[in-house]
Image (cartoon, rainbow, N blue to C red; front, side, top):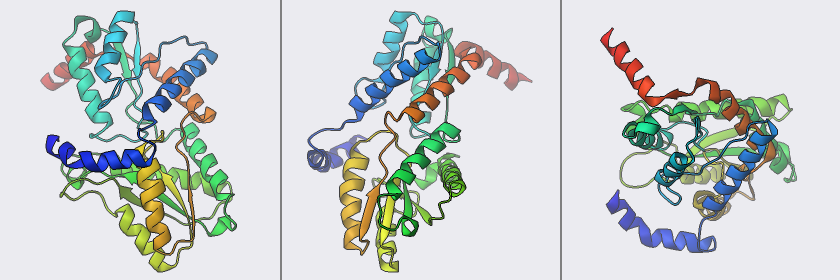
Length: 299
């Protein structure tokens, strides 16, 4: 990981410069947290909402220390990844479990972890709403190809480690397209994977290769849908909006659109609040879960 970081550093600086010098991810995430807190209050649940990030400030460890200071009595962990991957949600859960099990207070704190939520109707409908809005901006909406671009992961994680990410992405797209068809849309769609790094094989097909192929096949209108993200950041604002858009236009695609990340869309935030409320009754202390697992292993 250190070598990859060193190799990417100069290129990453250029990419951030292209979107104004920095990512809006932290600001948007904190706005989502504030919106979620308000939505929970509207449901008569007065809760603290903490933001913890895996690789940037505020780190998960900072959020956990604040949780300890506040002496909360129940915790719902809500990863902002709709689909589960061992590289994202899985990695964060492992860090959280390690910290919690080494702490007397945290190990007894009832916790409920929402591992994925891409099947939720509120989320699916919010995405479909955004797609319909963007389709209406094309001169001939019915001719637009809906292009889902998901963040890639190494193939080995899926094939050897059992990562469910690929299956969940595909099911998520199926649910979105089913919702669109129920509204009368009959657009074709396709899926590709972006953001690969290093020499290993990642999930295919690759977004850049598919865009060239679509242009060669005569596709003239395309709507990009970043399906792995709920916030704008470098992979939407630079990789998609600049790199992939330029490639698409050079490849013969004439009309380009992109669905914004959901951000603080009210229907989306309301659905996240519903997910939190629904998760609360199942909260259990990690120490209890570990003892239950040990008992199961002994049977």
